[in-house]
View 1: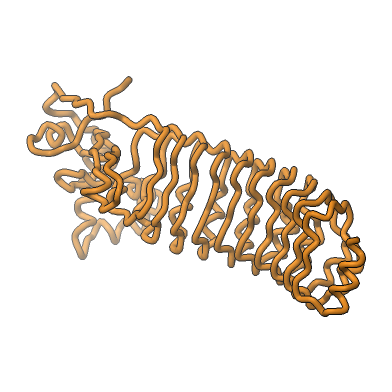
View 2: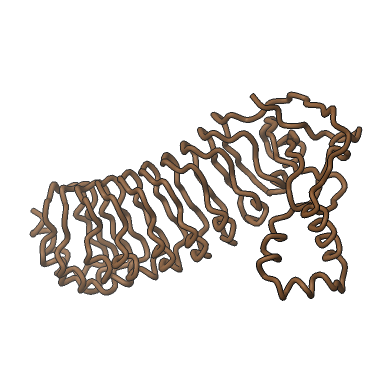
Length: 344
């Protein structure tokens, strides 16, 4: 039956060929003669390999291999350099081989949902044109820092994996509009989330978050899914301590950081000669109340942000957002709405 379809399609000089749901366990070699084929659907079959002859499909832009029996990505895919959309969902794939990723620089969509992938290799950075990356229902434990090279990504779906953290480099994706990381084991999101200026949809439901990172309320989100986390509650913690003794290192750091805000600054010029010191000082922050810089977080607090009032969203939910203060003096000021984080 499959061979009859091949013959008919070949005579018609077809640009799209559908062999989905045909119960085949091998792809007819004759398919390799469709050198002008743009779309090939082989999903919902019993395939575990692909013939190397398919490398002749030099114009193929879309390939669907979903719901088959692949335990590894067929090496021949690395030769299909014109591929733009690749579907590999519903297989038994455990890794993404480096040699295959290296040949898919034109890929804009990669769907490997419902597999057994544990690691994204650093070579993922070779998919320079990728716009949609979907890895739901896998065994991912780590996202590599090289994700930052995929600057055209607009959507990432990592739902239902084993992630305990996200890399800071994720915030280096200027076009990202949708981020799905629900049903993982995340205890926090990296600081600096405001760099995702185009983010509109965020799904962090079913994790272990206690609060959102600083400046979260300034994102222009349209949808937020965050149920099923362990967010801190409105428990007011007051401090009985009025003053603190800062270390000499902290005092010196605050002096340098303050001076570096001035232009021109002798300290900023001098820091260029000490890159290691500059790197240490770059880890500092600013007090949410007095705006003065500090090196070491003196007090971690939380503010409760209304999604409707503060973020102009439809939801009436209130979420906790992290705040850093520089001293007990600031914390003990009256009039602010920052809460100390109560330990359980």
